[in-house]
Length: 238
Image (cartoon, rainbow, N blue to C red; front, top):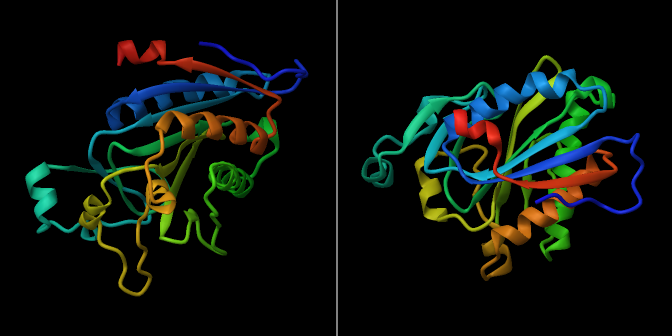
């Protein structure tokens, strides 16, 4: 599937969005690593956006510690959730179906973005997506992520290689919120994880969220148009 916005300037950068459905975290990370060189070598500023869900897994970023994981939690024991280290910013995060993983691979130098600029645009795009879908959300000063009235809706953890971003953000659409208890919050800075479904007090379709997110991230990153694809050919070799 390939769709574009109308009235675009072919000299402006495009965003290519790939809908990957459910993909193992390790396979998606390898796909990102393979795409970094390709994105960085282009001369048109194209941004690649990978959208998917992951099976249950916990990742520990550079700001986290294995101690953040409740090893005695019944859910962790019964579901045999793997815990791995991730070379990204942010702390300890749980990933599971119902959470939308958002991975923009953006050539920072081409766009003239600092890492801070990129993070701000990513978060603004998520906030505007939520607003479009009837959810009032906000970014807290001095923190990365997006919050609603019921708690944190999206976590952010980004890495940069050769001036191309990877990893990104994790938006809770309708995951099983009880599972997030396996990740222990700092008692001084307690963060309650919530979801779009909890904010709306009703179900919401992942396809609806993905479509809105592509539109708003295209604008947030200053791209002129977007293309939509289902799957990615490189995943067949990973």
